[in-house]
Length: 128
Image (cartoon, rainbow, N blue to C red; front, side):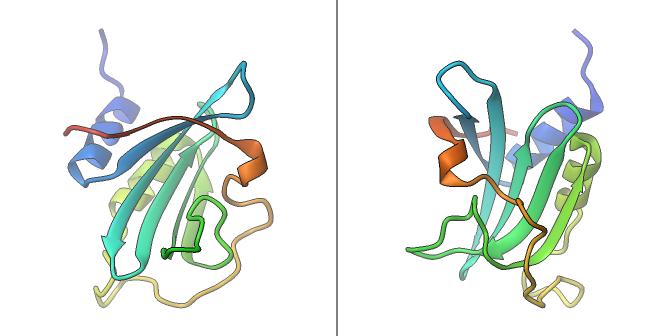
C-alpha cells in the first residue's frame, strides 16, 4: 500500500489533536469528513473534506450555542484541494500567536456544512 501525502497530512491532523467527524448527506452517502481542533478559550479550527477535489478550512468561535460546522464569523478561511487545505490549516499559527489571524469576518457564502446537509455517522480522535 502506497502512503500518499494526503494520508500523511491526515496523520498530522491526529497528532495535532483534531477530532474526526464523518457525515453523510443522506442515507446513501457520500461521506463527508470533517475535523475539529478545539483550542479552548472559544476558538476552533475546522476542516471539511468534501471529496478528492474540494476541501475547506476555517478558524471560528466555539461555545454552547455555536455550531462550528455552520460558522457565522471566521477569523481565517481557506479552500482548495484537500492536500493544500490541510497544509494551510496545519501551518496556521495558534490563537494568541503574534501572526495568528484575529480579525472576524464573514465566511464566503455556503461555507461550512449546514445541519440540513449532514447526518452524523461517527466521531473519533485520530491517533498520530
